[in-house]
Image (tube, rainbow, N blue to C red):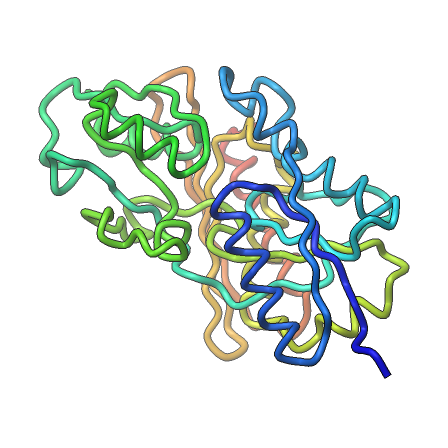
Length: 302
């Protein structure tokens, strides 16, 4: 009997392909035959404007969902922070894998740490979350947009367009670029985005055969943490036009969740909230996320 064959839909950036090949190799070890379908998404094509202005996170998943819907692919591998908080109808998150480092990394040719930058230096990021967190740490800095895939962002830095840039540590580590990291921000300094560092696998909701094939790749601890994080974002109307950070840690059954919100248009202080509790299910983790969102709103966040 032939091995069951599945096709993975993926973006064609180097990092996205690494993620797809990673899942491919894990499934092949279980005896499945796995093919990869590389695709270019709208999010990859629109590089002259920030994501928050052109439609948000869904731009990176829409084409992949069409491939799933049309039967051209059976699963799609995403960086979880690119996956909209509310999945499109007919699709579900079938698997969240063990998390890589969720923190942000400081990358610079000249300066070892953010603290070393001269007054008014230019730092690159297109993330509203990173913008408000950087402004909280260093109000004097000039934050400039930085779009493109990982290699494009590093090239722009190397061309001297920025004194430094902030990237997800997980992407650099996965691509063997750890030597580019000058410093990793602790989470009390730069709180990560919901889902940062985790891989999520999306399927058509009716595909129980794919769901079963993915079961052994799921990491329950990571899934509980990101469920809480994504619940904060969902309750706040989550999209990448939101300057929101949310990060959970899970030890045993104890989950601790912190969130922060800033106003990208004015230099007002960050609004912060945190909660914790014992969790044994996604619903309990999401409940803590909803509580934290309510705490943010009580402090005037809309």
